[in-house]
Image 1 (cartoon, helix red, strand yellow):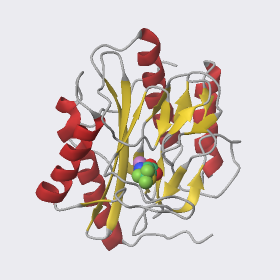
Image 2 (cartoon, rainbow, N blue to C red; image 1 turned 90 degrees about the vertical axis):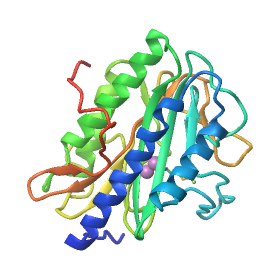
Image 3 (spheres, protein in one colour; image 1 turned 180 degrees about the vertical axis):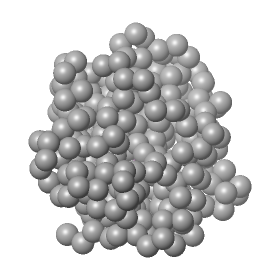
Length: 266
Ligand code: MF3
Ligand code: CO
Ligand code: CO
């Protein structure tokens, strides 16, 4: 496992990439309304990245080994879809929850972030799941400082989610990020406090917990990409890209529209 410690020059490029990824989410927010298709959201984001930002949508044609090339520029995961939902012609409807996951390449470096969106008015249960998952991401971020271990992040997230009877998806994790979309280390969203790799200044990785309202088991859709819950329960995810600083962390995927760190309530 080769973990790349970023130089000051690389960190500056990652700050730009992170902000640009977050700004795509700001841009698309007003369009997430009942009646829009996820394909329309994909087109809007694609054109904004390519024509306005001059960034490259990293998902488009992304083909890790064992996968067909990803056909779209963003991921849109609706309701029981956990992650990697492929945009299509289905219209969003009132009460849906949707994760939009954006990864841009700017000057050769990746910024990766996702948020949950309510389409119209969510159910009480859907709102609670999304808010808990947002808090779970931040409980994980709180653990990011030199001398802590990756297991501290996973433990904080797992404790919160399982404490209210939700479950943590095991098959997908956060990841190192930089010149490559997915680098070492893997950042699990479950684990034991004090276990795993020691966190060091200059690392950059994502935290992106996927929390299911029901059981943790997953199902792969025949499109080769979309992952859903096996029991069809709702699933939520939020993602930030994080730099480890001398005495803590800096969240790189921030912009004017990014929601602030929450008050803890779970
Ligand atoms: N953005 C996702 C992540 O957070 C990865 C999407 S890969 C894709 O790691 F090919 F589905 F886009
Ligand atoms: Co990611
Ligand atoms: Co992502």
